[in-house]
Image (cartoon, rainbow, N blue to C red; front, side, top):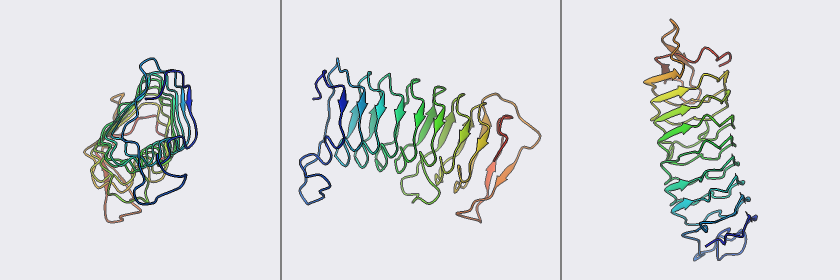
Length: 239
């Protein structure tokens, strides 16, 4: 149990718990559970803090604002996360490699998700809240990744995000529905590449044009057409 008085968990604090730093020797002990006090004052979890442990679920305190670089990477049995009510930033690779993770719910305090934060997870449905203003490249996939743990079926993007960057949702072959918020003005290279079919890609404003079918080139699988049966927001100026 992390005491209520702890305001920050430092770098490498529980990195492969029971092992020496950077150790991968057989029999290395790993944390299976971490509990935060109900009156926790924790605000930050620094880089590598719980890297490569055996956590199965996380209930983070409502005071937590920041999750650092690779903080929970390679907890391959992690299935659920409660982010609390104050999280603002999720840093690079924070939850990468957690392939048992199938669902996440982000609070409306979250503003930034950095690159590779949720790459190689089993998330099937994703709602980006209106509070999010920035999602970095390859946050939920990447065009040069294996598709083994790319399970997204639907994505809803909130009203504040202006750009869908390179590879953000790439390599999800099961992705069927993408709802793009009305503030999006650009969609980067490979943002939705290597997805074999889209039943619906639409904007939240409900505005449609006469161009009812858009086909994007797929650099990874040139024979696969990516089809959009509805239309992007009228705000999109660059694809």
